Length: 638
Image 1: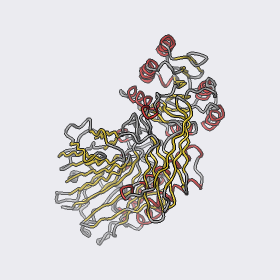
Image 2: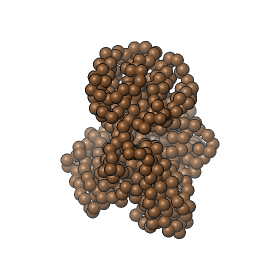
Image 3: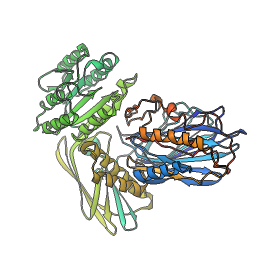
Image 4: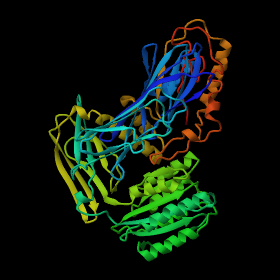
């Protein structure tokens, strides 16, 4: 979770690091608290990094100095930036956090002799249920030791808790507190080199789902959890039609193409007999194993494996033709579930190369409503990943980023497992009574071991609400309907935040597809300000009392100000490979391009030698990226 890099001859001591997480029906709120102290008789300075999950939103940050806590405000991004620049130019102590798609929260501090500073950070995320289990990851790796590390994870569920463990940490204590709650505790006197994973499973909700309610004044919120399994449905998973569209252009040569052969060879071997499949490799041109979809029998699978193993990487990247070829093989009247698994490591360079034109062509050709799941295989350019994500989102799928490292085949295989067994398709949710502002975490398909969660608002005073889910299963169309009595409970106070979190993510996905517009940005900003989330359009800002006499050296301030302005104009910070964002699949994600190193970006903003000026206790030596002006946890990215 926390890493520090030393900036001077000495560095602060971490007296303790506490991580506390509360998980309510899959929604996790984590608070990180660390107390840092300077045991020396000189001023020391240090930099610190918190790694948080990519899908998490920071919701709180504070610093406690000399017994007084200073809590950051969530402000509209432009307002926070304006106040930060004003404070910096006037020599006042201030800090700013701006974030877009990055999960490294960094700050820098100076400590007076004997001084202690407590840092507290809170972030929130919705855990995804995959293959029947939830996984919470706590990043613990650090560049320094902690005198006392403690981790507490509390799990609470509406349904019975059937499994709870920390599989890679045998020293962690696991306790079942009740039928529906449990706790994991871990303590040590040093930071381990790996993350702590907590895995848990719960019983499935009833066939028609659970509905939870919460009322806050005149506003009512509900959460409908829908997650039937094969036993509930009385049938097995649906047959699918699946085409693997795989990049074999020149950039895939070597280790990448070998990994592709390994993972997709295994996937083809495991295809069940009721499925139909095909394989398309593409570079400048398109090569299909067959002109049509084939039954997944032993003979066809053996031929497909031979086709895969003989191919070599070369040529350019004709994404448009490859996907259009695949879409042309699906029959809109088929009762099997249509899926494309699309893998590429680069941008389109042959044929139609405009991402917008390709997206439109694919959307127009997708009359069979094929779900396109994209695998960005080591793509370095963030804009290319956004292209794949947008294309998948507007074609009933998702996109994931994977690193071509030693575990790539295993990671891609695990991702495929989550989409390989469709139980229900064409889901549609509707609710009786006065409900509004619905948001759904799921797609149109429900895969084995996953769930769909619908959140919304209702009018307080409502006695009951009817939930209707229409869908298709292996045995035909079905309706899942139930009248739920509205019983608001204080234990469900997390639901409004889940609703806001999910709504913001849904709006951000719309921006991926539609592009930024005033309406979407305004909705995201309004919700983020109301619920206190840091998003691409909101920032955290904190301001501390002004430094006391003696006045800082004007020459030094001018130099520091110039450095800050250069950072502001650059509006980027390359964070280094060891701290790249982690995707939901556990893989590192690309940042937007930048030409300089994280440590280099700090140079100039932090003094190379300890500063020993006198000042008001607790503030005179409280410095950061903006040197003598104070703390800055600022990443300015477009």
